Length: 466
Ligand code: DUC
Ligand code: ZN
Ligand code: ZN
Image (cartoon, rainbow, N blue to C red):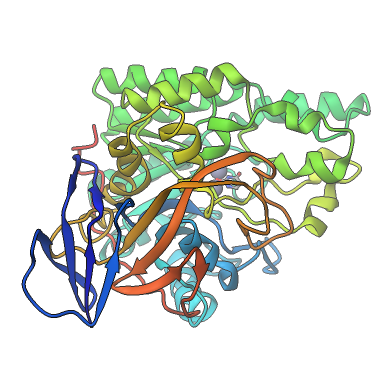
């Protein structure tokens, strides 16, 4: 199929200009004015911005409990990403009980996601059970197109928790083989001390979630991970950085030459912790995520850090946890599963509260939403750019739309939207995934199972993000 997108303003991470885009099959074949050829489909993008399809480097469409029971809304709901302009998701594949990371990744692609996932999909390994075998798997993971691995410094004493011994050994091995490490940085002991102290006093409502996860519990762990990364020259991405204190550690480490980048998430940019003060559990439980939501001053710091490259990218940390699972913690905040949905909201939040609010430029938006995440995951410029030869993953964005975030217009795969009731400016009107229209007039028109695995190359961070 030959498609022409004409009259739009193209925005990439490098700048913006007016040009038409010709698509031949799944790839962008030409960019320019008065392009030759005949086209079966012509899309008029006058008055619209044409952006590269988003790359969400941080999603959990499906996660498995330690007992192997599926939770989170699942790949059936992954259409929400393309509705929000994200054409590639990078999900986390944990090692399922009794299985290696490699077997878990194959199972996830061949059984869980197959026939369901709508956007293209790349994967991070998520080590939730460490053994010497984990280290042996690292070169094989890189070879199979999974050049990134996440570890949890929180959640002690579960098998997910990685102490310094495990973290450092993994970073050493990762550095040898071109793997970029990701860390969930919170000091597990600090959290346990505080959580137990509050619980002993009977303080069990959702708001105690944020009171027992203070910024220092995050910044201490960030500083440890960054010190290791620098010492062993292991590329590191600190995910879901939530506060000024933690971001400051990364800013200083980068200035000092550490191979480290920071990711933040839309919720840390626009939502504050007092959401959890609501005495109605049905409301307050929705924002229990880790690290916890912070203060308005942290939001301002993070926007500014994005502008100055101290924070490099924005992932959604999409964790579509159904309400019945949130209710597991009705009487004790420690039992509320951590996470909030958001893959479909990432672009709309960044545009509304970033671009339309004058905080970031459109070029910066494309950088943090598509180009940098693609680089980090080793899938750039196949993904994350508008260039000849890149996949024709495109968002035709209507900046004139005005609405309100709601789970009806901005579905998440679960019963709620984390931004419910907040004003929205602009929205993706048409979205193409490898040349096929999957969103038209802001409605999903694609097919379940259209997503393909996108193998990443090693050293995705390529040191050029530093
Ligand atoms: N960390 C994440 O990155 N996502 C959900 C929960 C968590 O702890
Ligand atoms: Zn995490
Ligand atoms: Zn996450």
